[in-house]
Length: 341
Image (cartoon, rainbow, N blue to C red):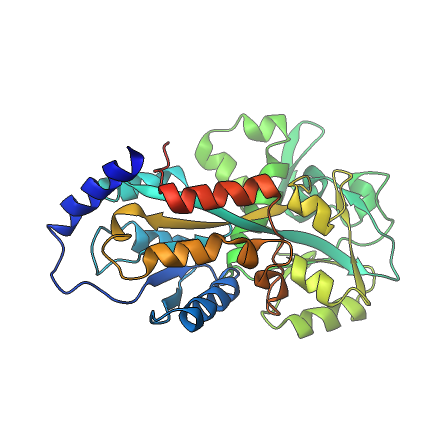
């Protein structure tokens, strides 16, 4: 019944689409996820008679604006991202007639707080990190400018070292995840900040220090690695792959008592785990040549399984879902069940 429903839906959509159906899949999305998609696209093309999909690195926000712009060959078929669609983005899709969207979880990666292997390793909480990095904080019930100069001033369990953290550049997709997974989560732990009106709360929860305690890192990860080596008491907030590629020099610190290991990320217990999503317009599957087969390739075990080829992508660190998650991904690729909000 589900397949019949979507066949009828696609037939209805096709009736209003241009006659010259597109023969290339169009995928937009975040910079962090595109290395995965490039590998899948090239493998898909090599194994089939289909043209290699068009990949556009737009960022997640711009990608959703394009994806939710409407139905038809002028609009993308898939968006890939390391965060879930927001309510506002979903509403934009509905407003523009993009009503049948299938959400497919395909894997994990993570944000990590790293420092030199020679330095003290720390167990942070999001609230402690917020208190270290935000321009305004809550202290003794009052909301005030952040004057913490040492970690131990925030909590005696933290090092007697200056607060010095390199974060992702604001132009990167990882910055959005840094804000969502660390800053906003930590900010929400403070009662008086949480009681503010939404506009005031947003301002406090999204304003970072500019006094030198928090700096935005370069896109060049080699430069970031050199900075961490030159500042052995400093911390960096970066991708899990940066840690795995440089684990002879740096190490990951735990969050809420959980270390950033592949096992913890795979099962989602590490608090800064990011899920890699693919959102597809169900109505485009029948209209765009090869799109259904691409979804099968994307969710197959030889792609996203523990020994799948995505685990060997050099530019990024792909952590597979557990077996239940991978089975669910394949079910979504087959059924094209629409997500609901």
